[in-house]
Image: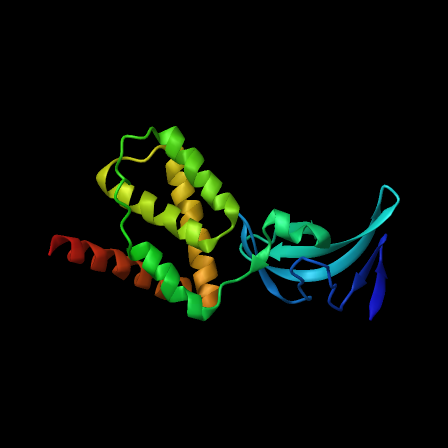
Length: 189
């Protein structure tokens, strides 16, 4: 089924792309550094005389709309949400203490490293950033930029875990806090 909308044709079926992931209308997907969104439509648009297909992704948290060329999915990092079977792996990342977290790196070097990890779109990288900044916050004041990164990482982590577990944020946050309490008890023994 196709219907006209301004200069775009909105198609309700799946676009198949060679070598790229493909999504259907209604699928949940994760856009790096913005989080979980829903594919609202797949549109064809003519740009510079060439026809291109785009996924129209609406971020669930803030309703931001992002147009992603279907042929560019891999390079922008659009991916499926993690499955419920992967949640324990994310929790393992949160439990694992990084030995050199309290090194004498300057805040701006840490900030750049953490920003690069968030931009990968991997929830495993997001979990590492959250873990490291959460633990660092317990022993020293974070810079303004690091506090913002901690909040961003927490939001990205919570929303995707809630989606994967089909649970509310309070439940997932309680589980995450218990992981850190568990880790603190294990290091004291």
